[in-house]
Length: 222
Image 1 (cartoon, rainbow, N blue to C red):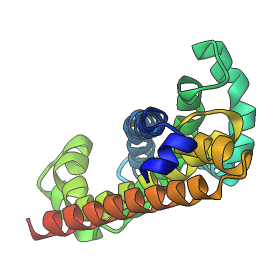
Image 2 (spheres, helix red, strand yellow):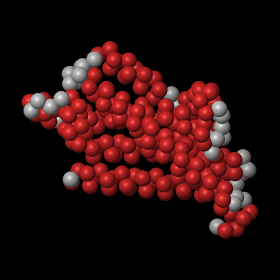
Image 3 (cartoon, rainbow, N blue to C red):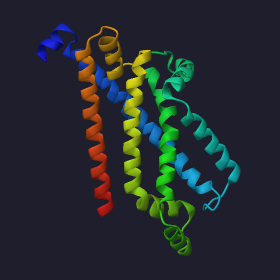
Image 4 (cartoon, rainbow, N blue to C red):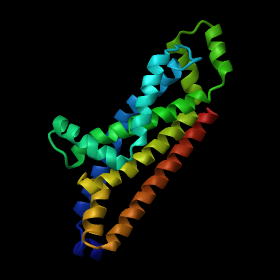
């Protein structure tokens, strides 16, 4: 391993790539989760039969989410990069990837959150309404706690999808592990680096999935 680092890639470069991937995933996931949870709750509230039915708003939001989710990430990335250039004044590097990653993951999370919230039994909502709870109280104290184990698994799935997207961003110079695999593994025909980057990504995904499963099970017991 040391010989590999000395002859092909420095430890500093590999560490920087890991840090870039962590930054892209963490920032995009936090902001994307805030937007996604908001949209998911709004989808639940405004649907026909919801506690705050707004058919037009629900249809518009539903169509917007479906349009964004229908685009492969690489196409979305290319389309959004000009917007990212106007916002962060660059179209390459980690900073430029935040905008397309957030746009990519937010609708994905919104749909997952909607499905999780729809799994809450209608009897719980009816009981909350019978007690005179407001719409905010129904969401905050009844629906979200009941759906929390499912929400945790949904967010785990979203984070793994986000890691896949960050790896793909390496094809356009986005930095991170994906950039490492493209520049050193593919373009320089160094298959050892390619294999190591794959192993690192697999280990990261396994850790996140295991952590999500554990948190979901713990929340369900509580």
